[in-house]
Image (cartoon, rainbow, N blue to C red; front, side, top):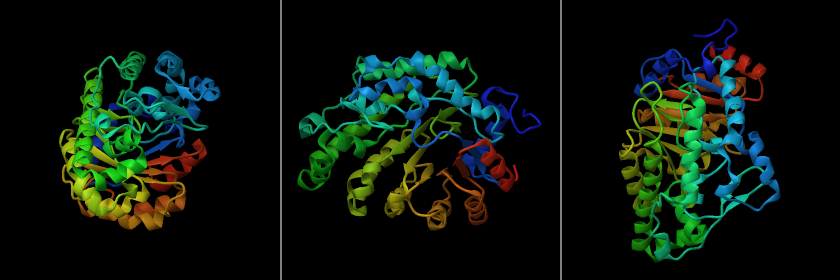
Length: 366
């Protein structure tokens, strides 16, 4: 149900009728145009929360400093863009809306406060320490993560879905625990132990996310990833291996590909988050049939949209749904529409104003 001005009469634009478009996306059904969504939130969500501003005077954030209730007003404000966007999105929330990277904190990293983000600090642990990581359900960061999720569920009152946050993957965790340089050298100097660490970290990743999902309700019978407003009919998980941007294809295939295959097999609607810097590994990622969808950022300082088209087409040739996220002007959107088969394509477009949204809606014939 939408208003005559393109807005929504359903809270946050979460009309259940939109779910049919998501099903078509996952099924790569014949459609007239891609699934399309617009967001006014930029690359750095930490800027959106008043509760984060008090942390600018400190070096590190601790779980005790995070009051989920203090974030709820801004969470609801961000969701209200759905009332006026007139797009295809189901909008939801995750704890801190990716402003807080929970998994590094749960893994024991100090959480450093930077001007526009919060990042886990490298720990430089021993191989034995890195290989023994497991989820302690009494861990203060994990308890705060779950507390935040449950606070969002109460605030939602069924009006929007709540999901896991966007979290780092096994190679990223390896870099945080051992140090990024040491984690690369481990693959050469201690290959058996390094492989065992990656498998252990994959299990840790699953333990955290599966435990979190035990407490989250489904939304109209489906699952959700809040970072990309991606609803799915079956259990969903965002996979990430940003650290592999400095791996060779041979190293990735030998050490990481089996781990990613096993991770993806545990979530029927798993999807892999990629940056333009990882396109040299795209063939190796596409070899993992268990990955059901690929999400590729159009990075602000990366290749042009025209230069990324061959990579997008490669995903389509593999018959995988493709989610593209980034900022695009009208000409770039026209190029995407002209160059790609609309089946199984989701354009998640970052915008600067409602005026820009209206202009792009016209280009897309929405």
